[in-house]
View 1 (tube, rainbow, N blue to C red):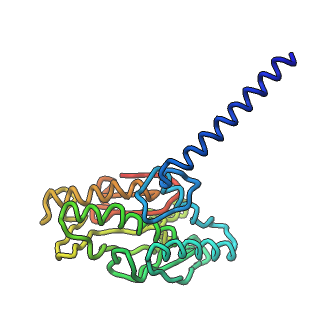
View 2 (cartoon, helix red, strand yellow; view 1 turned 90 degrees about the vertical axis):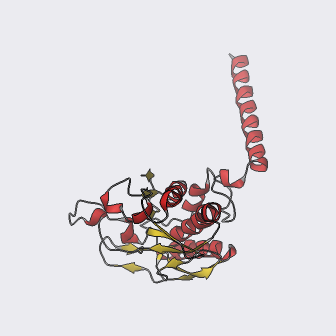
View 3 (cartoon, one colour; view 1 turned 135 degrees about the horizontal axis):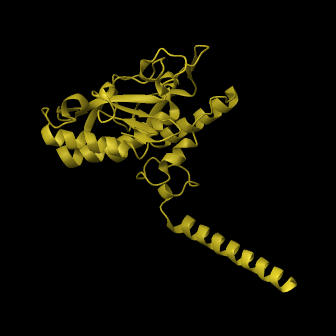
Length: 253
């Protein structure tokens, strides 16, 4: 009996040592974007752990003001360290389901500007946008068109409403009600060409098959980073834009 118990503990010890050695090997050799315990770096490609790393900046809906401010300042510092100019915006609370916490505004720097500009969004959504721009949109535009994006045409972030504009109290609030969603209508390139979801999703617009390939690849790249990504493939309500949000669950259509 004692021998069996000793063998059991020896086995546990060997397994623990093996797990520790594996962890140290991964920590030293694997790319940081694949390791959820590594800090987020906006300069790195989107990896298996990138979306999880961004979620470290998400603010719980029941968070106290000191935690909201601390987390938001850390998030803004991450953006600024990557060369993005960002400012704190005013949080809002209508006393109902429309509550915006950790609001920021991207004002310039090393990121493709949103047009119209000045949109207010939660800071983690701003981080997701910057990564998507750097790791998806910019490489796509240069490889397919030979021209970088000059502006991302958008339909805004904040809208105090429930999903699909429902008036039913039983339906959950839209992520737009928290400024945690961005609707992208298209991209304007530096050479003046435009690619839009409405005109080019099916390849029938001015940009033809190139536009279709670009918009669909932009959607697919966003699915690796945002919580929910909705396109014309989802329903008619999204025929003219990509809905990108930071919801804590995944849906890509």
